[in-house]
Length: 377
Image (cartoon, rainbow, N blue to C red; front, side, top):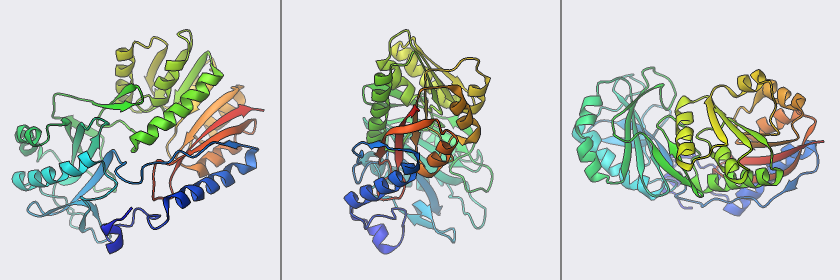
């Protein structure tokens, strides 16, 4: 993939851009193999390769410059805006929306936040696109000052972006290096963005987590679904379930008598997952908001199978120890950080990885997903 920003030194986020994609995959596979090698013989399936460009369904746009001349991209170390609106990683629908957002900033005088001076209002714009091209746009603001000018131009925004589904304002009041804050104000009638994944429609609310690469997420869920189908457990927990990707796919291939439970800390994500359950009439599936470790430790029963998809830090020693002592025979671990995966496996010596697959969610970087099937020895 050619990138003018990379060549000019404006953005080096794609650290492996100069490495042929086949070599990138081989290097990631070699690293993952090495990290799992101490835990026994593993059958490695064919890596799941991504498209090399236009694969990102979400753009985290830092707004810099001024209201008259905004930059849409990132900020450099000095806090100056670097415009990256033609980034080749974005889905074309996102790229097409950015000039409209530029025009909105100018017309409504949405003053960008100046990081060094700690002045201004508009910090970031988060744009997410579904498989059918619908958009969710979230304006991350320092305060509520710009809500009125944004709200007053919603009709104009919908005219310019007929594929726009959800619009919201997120408040990030503190001067911190975060993408968004805890407060969300939805300005649109619709509150969720339907995300088509395989033959399911998952509903994404503004503060719900969803994988940034829809095509690869679909393959990841299908791999987990196949291992669940082969195991056919009578009960399954999906911990760190997000909007329910693994649990919903599992429920599709399990008998109605099976019990599937999804646990996620984000209440927004749980509401999204419950909506999908209702739409598909999945009587064997329930979702609850809560901490994954606390949930597991409080239960008096143990499921036959567990799926986890934790953040980069992994599941941690406490939950790993509980799983080790639980007697669970089969366990699926979907990891976005193979190093924390390996650390967690040290706390589960009775569960041996038997099958694994590298899933390249993040081309041109050193990051990747690894999904592993573990069997109690």
